[in-house]
Length: 372
Image (cartoon, rainbow, N blue to C red; front, side, top):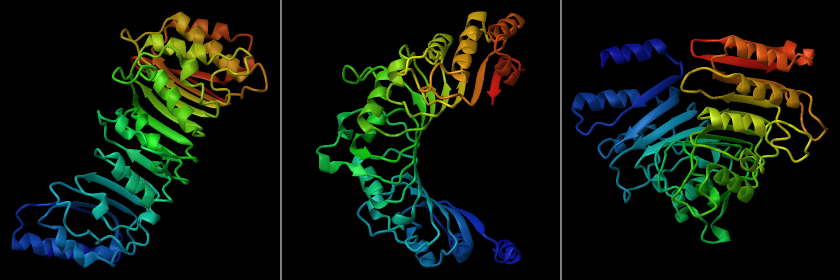
């Protein structure tokens, strides 16, 4: 306790970041220590709080004393769903970012929900609870769902009727761990511009026509109509039809994609080859970042030829319907000397483009970079 007091005295009015974890058995000294730490709540800027049945009441002393708090992580396990509302953080005028985890019930949380612009949910959440949260956060701009739930593809996520659909007019960025895009059938994000999916996989338990990864992604965009402009995507399965997959992503301008194997990467680069068709794949694409690897850690000539042709067709688009690409960053297995020679020979008649391209090597991989 004296050491804590000394540290707090020396820091004076500096903003604090605090972490309070739960203990099942708290002795008198620990309780006094916690209460002294909580007495500094007026200085908190960031707080991570783990609640338990034994410590939840101690936080009553900070209610109305959180003028600086901007970021809050709140969670806990084995909490009663029938107890009173937890209102210690209800009055926090600067709170904008919220992280929730554990078995804490959102219905029991009294928070300044309308202020929240960033929400991260780290555990499984039922559709009804997610609906409650999104209904209470009309100004939400960023939503992150970190939990990979094997039940996300079930019909339970479908809206029972049109009145069950929750609209989030301000939401612009969504990050999910796995695809699980069927979870969003009950929600409408008319302003969504950025989507991040950590693992795009096939789903052979789904209904016919919604099993392949490209069908899942296509149907998601078709049903939602979201105006996505930026996509970060890790493909964890074979995709054979990128034209279908990106058919509804015609507004996409920025793509960051990780591909699982050589065959998939080859199909991807060939799909992006602009041939003059106004309905080509991703006509608005301006920034591309792609990565793939192979078992033997080396690239062959045919692969780099596909990449060179794709870059050239996007750098000098065949018609006004296709945007001029501004940057390309490709991480691929290590380039051999013959690959480098073939790549440059492929672009020898385009000196302006060739002068913008650089390559760099590491032990098992190489990098191709082009920036206007």
